[in-house]
Each structure stands twice: as structure tokens, then as C-alpha cells.
Length: 224
Image (tube, rainbow, N blue to C red):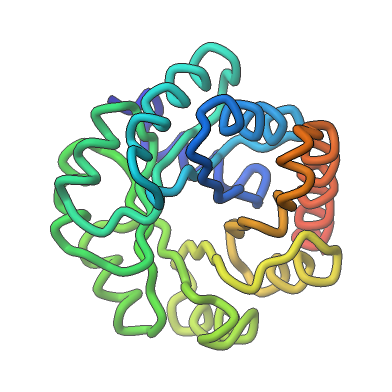
């Protein structure tokens, strides 16, 4: 089961502000990417449930992170039902992320004290997720529903909300600054943080350097 409690996971989200989102069928490649991100300062990483036997990759990745990446909260994303959530938690997922809100997933995650961040696109969905015990809600797809302005607007009447965003997030100073200033606690970032040619070449240093830059841009903007 998860090594970290809810508070520790949320602190991992907020401490860097950047949560990589990644899937690869080759466990060794996945290990390389996770370690590269960790070396770049990342402390929360989402492995997505998007391919055949993804759970088998995650099982090895979870054990790898425990031994090689101390302090890293490793979670599972693209989890849309409770049985899948239970399986990932059994293999050490520190948090669960979904593209949608499923009350059954919220219930089983609450039972195990594991944070669940569901995808929400309206104020009503956010309210329903919070009522179900979701501490950090994920605005998704963030660019489509209104971008940084949407987050600013929902935080006005719901100032207690902790918001993660995915979709329309890019590893540039302009983009990350806009999201940070909107009030999100963190952003989820996928393919643009891991160019295919860089991953294929196993250029882990490039990924580490880009993660460090992304964290720096986000944190600098958040302090302004």
C-alpha cells in the first residue's frame, strides 16, 4: 500500500508545482524517465494506466522508486473505476488520478487514505468531488474549459479549493507562469516534457534539466 499519507502527497504536489504524466510499456525506459525527473527535482510523478499490462510496469516502477527515489510520491493516472484503483493502490500507488469523477473511486481511495484527484470541468463537478472527499481536484481538459482564467474565476467563490490542471500545459516560462499565477497548486505535464526523440535516445539529462527549469519557472511566478 501507499507509503505516504494524504498530507505528504499534497505537499509533494505543492512543493515543486510540476507533476510529470507518463506511460511507457518498457519498464526500463519508465525507470529512466522517473529517475531523470527525480534528479531534476520532481517529487510527485503520475504513471498513466494507458497500455496493456500497464499495472505490471507500475509494479516494478513502484519498487524502483522506493529504493532509488526517496521522497518521491508515485501515483497512477487514467484510473476510471474502483477495481483498477484498488489494484494500483495494492502495488503502492501514493495517489490516484482520473480524467473524470467517479464516486466509487473516491470511496475506495478514502477508505485507504489515498488522495484521489478526479478530472472536473465545471464548478458543480468540483463541488461534488470535494463533497466526496477529494482534496485536490483536477481541472481537465484545462485548456478547453477556459485555461488559467477559469481557475482564477472558480477560486474566487471557492477559495479553499486545491486545483491541479492537465491539458494545455507546456514547459515554457510563459505558460507555467500563467498557470502558477492563476492559483493552481500544481500542473500535470505529459508529452511535451518528454519529447519522443529524447526518450528514444535515453537522454535523461535533458529531461532532468527541463524538469528543473519548469519547476523554477513555476515557483518563481508563484512567489510574485
